Length: 125
Image (cartoon, rainbow, N blue to C red; front, side, top):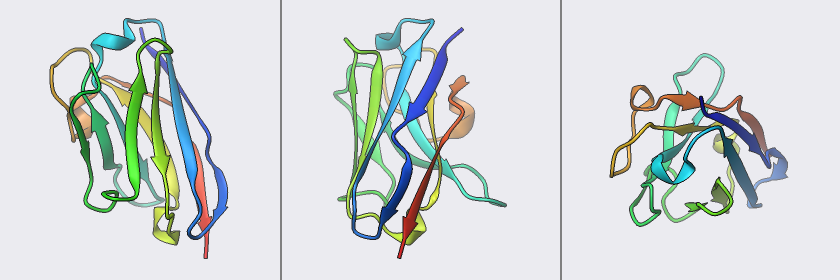
């Protein structure tokens, strides 16, 4: 069983930056494609970014392109989401997710097997 723990959320002003981290335990981190998703009240969880097992292939949602960057450090069992130029519409609970196997990246929530508890990001305008 894989456990995921997000950290790094908080309150930031519009235009500011945050770096989210997601630490994994209980499995072989380097074998898991990873993703970041976010959710606001009353809405479905939406894709933000994803990364392959090795980190060589990445994908970002259109809303994140040019501002957010996903990365991973397999030696530290951690995936990151660097968020720059934050906007009020980025306010959400951010979740990291792990998939048991696969060689690419994945954009859909049902393609992931494990989820963290989420971390709140609030961007004030």
